[in-house]
Length: 81
Image 1 (tube, helix red, strand yellow):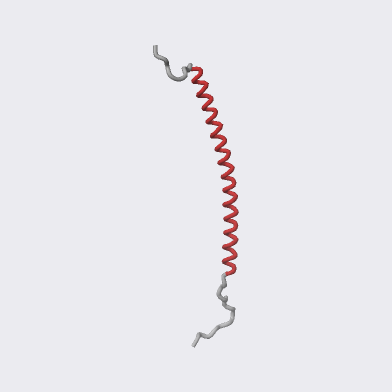
Image 2: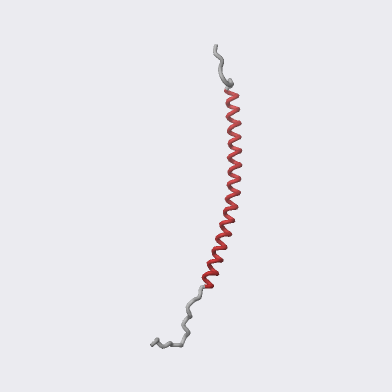
């Protein structure tokens, strides 16, 4: 008889290994999902702050822009000669 290389496994042993691997992978996936949720929250806060600063900057820029003189009611200016 020739010897078999590696481990000999029963169906029960293989089933247990599969269940252990399934649990291990499930735990890793849940950990990654929690981490991803954490980083999404941070990203949303950073984006909200950036949008807030941009809106304030645009308001200040538009308010500081010199506007043309509004016409005064009742005053008629003569055309230039």
